Image (cartoon, rainbow over all chains, first blue to last red; front, side, top):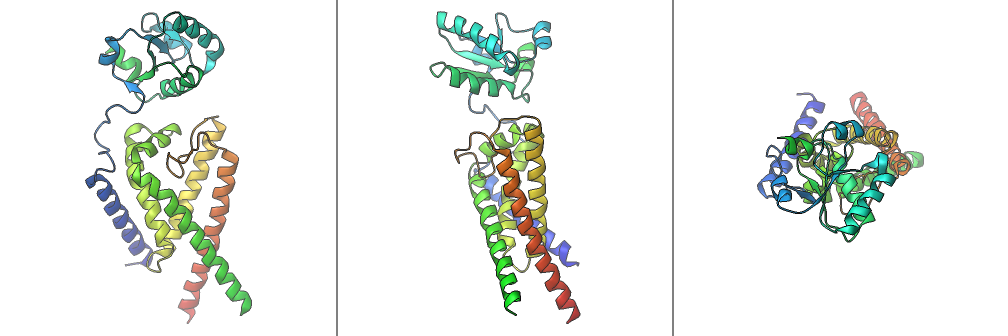
Length: 137
Length: 150
């Protein structure tokens, strides 16, 4: 067997053993199982029972096509205008803020939620697990 | 003879630095693969499902190649794989920089206090490590050719 191939096999075997150790010891979650909530996320079923302020972090076109009732559009593109509207709404009636974007994989809601948390340290802020897709379903 | 010894010393130092960097980078990620998967997701190159697989396997590959670069049995392929990984990391950082992503690198795990990445520094650091890999591979190739001649 060529030396290069032998070395590749040894490295692959050791890496596989290591990954198997991570899985068996519980260090790593099973990658083929869809993860439950990640940090800062909230399920729609939980959000529905709360009095919350919805933030739509999608683009303008998507927002105009449909959004959660009373949701404020706020993302990196309209931050200065959107944050002013949000501040006005939140200071008048402080309540949890939930940010959503298009789907589970969009990521914008988490970035907007993180940025919002810096702007409003006292606020309770989440991103919606599954995003707009979950709401539509 | 003195020059040869000096060159060998350089290669040994390069090997130790590469081993140290890769082992130090791997351990926190092995301890917290979920946080590493989040860092990978931040690059917006692959989806969450694939990120979980990469977060599971990549740190172990870094650990094995980091230690392997010191072990005669697998050191040549380990050096080559480290070179490939560094090239991949440079490409990812350039891509994130061009797209203006303000993300944590995740290079040494999530709990290192890095909030956002200084891409210039990351790219320069990885290019320096890549040069160290080239030095190590060149020496290995010379040793192989020398062994074949004798």
